[in-house]
Image (cartoon, rainbow, N blue to C red; front, side, top):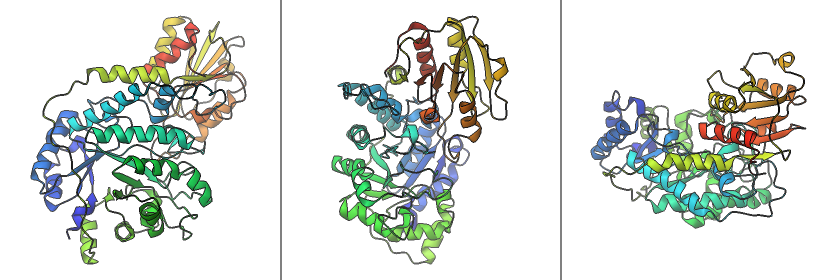
Length: 483
């Protein structure tokens, strides 16, 4: 058996032309496929076509498109994160406050299906046939540094509803959906890109919470599930990461009756730092993993498997969609994304959001030009608004804040791999500004505001221009978002 047939290495879309011979060599050696990061849509599309034609078997062309093609590929549409989509679709839903939710879910599932249709149409045009989504993790831990807004919500019902709808729509459109990160990355305080998280929950709790969305997705027919690099002692007392744990994979296969393809998370992540990567790949395959994702050096890993005389069984091949030659119409997708961004904005606080003398502080966790759309939108409405921007290392300018102002604090904090969660600087700045602030606004991780004791809070979940403009509209028109 060709060991390359179980490997899905990285393909950098921005380098697909310059490094095409390398990727072509891997395709001819028989890799199962590639995971695509970055690049321009037409260039990636043409490169993938050539690789598919050169491969003896259809290639799995996968990508992390939790927010649509634009999350990875220039020229695609980027949509709000999962928690924002859930907020937009679900009536009276809020990630930090479930009280007053008697309205239940809205009936606007058509909008949700149009969204996931757009994901599929754009992915197929680019040549991507496998989307590493939905995230089926339940964000039950507000200190989670890597899931947060990537989850549809904090409870099994919410995550199952949206996750199963995403599986259904993607797969109806010929895209392989991949639920992740089994058996659940939601109740962790550690980013598995950096070190190994431990899920310290009893088995009964896992069965009633974490495993529910995966069980429901399996019933829905999800074709692929990604294992998380997670230690889950309730299932495997040895503490081995799920990726190399026969017990955890047996739970997925035997107890949950999953018949599809099991794929590892990226093998270069810090959670596996205690293991030799090639040895860990062999351990994962022996434990029951079908596909090894993102080996650092696919040639080295394949050589190691050959030396160890690894003998796998046959890998079930997907029926993958063919090339989509006609150019689909993407024109409505950006409008759809903007509509969701506006609908997603939620708030908790006073009834009247109008401001008499606003002063704006922008907290930027990264030294980037975030917040310019929001500042501009506020200045259009309040020409005399005071404004200061603060980045890591800056002092909090409490002395510059007028005593009689309506202080707005806009926070730009992204969920990002290898980051480790919100910085200590940001959390300290938020705490320092708690007392004088009239309204906090989160353009990103909503949980940075969970310890705020007073004032109003607005949650936009991400920093798209449409989200910033929607918040400005709420603050100036007395048109409140959802509570």
